[in-house]
Amino acid sequence: MKMKSAKINAFRTWGLLLTMLGMGLMILGTAGIVFWGSAGKVFAAIGLVIGLISMMASLAIYFWAGMLSTSAVQLECPECHKLTKMLGKTDRCMFCHTILTRDPEQATITAEQLESQH
Ligand SMILES: [Zn+2]
Image (cartoon, rainbow, N blue to C red):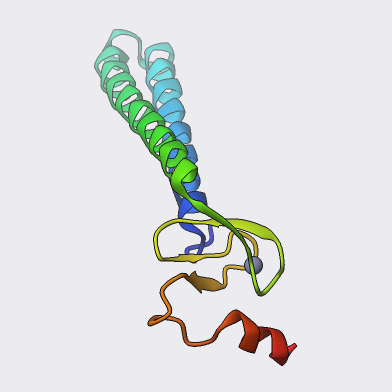
C-alpha cells in the first residue's frame, strides 16, 4: 500500500480495506458456527456486528469520497501531464504522487520552472 498517495485514492483504499475487513469478519463469524457449533454462535454474532459496522463505515467513506471528488479541482499534472484531481490547496498527483499546490506561498517551484527543467 502506498502511503504517499492522493487524498481521493487514500479514501478509496481505506474504503476498500474496511469492506474487505467487514466481509472477512462476517465470513469468519459464519465459519465459527460451522466449526464450533453453538459455541461459535457468540463468535459469529460479534463477527457479524463488527463486520456490519466496518461495512457501514466503508460505505460512509465511499460516500464522503464521492462528495469530495465532486468538489475536487481537476487539473493537468505539471510533472506527468495526466489529468488529476486534487482536494484542498495541497494534494498529491494521483499518478506520479508529486505534491501539487494551488497556494503560491507553499509552492517551491512553479509549473513554468518545472517545465524548463525538462
Ligand atoms: Zn502527475
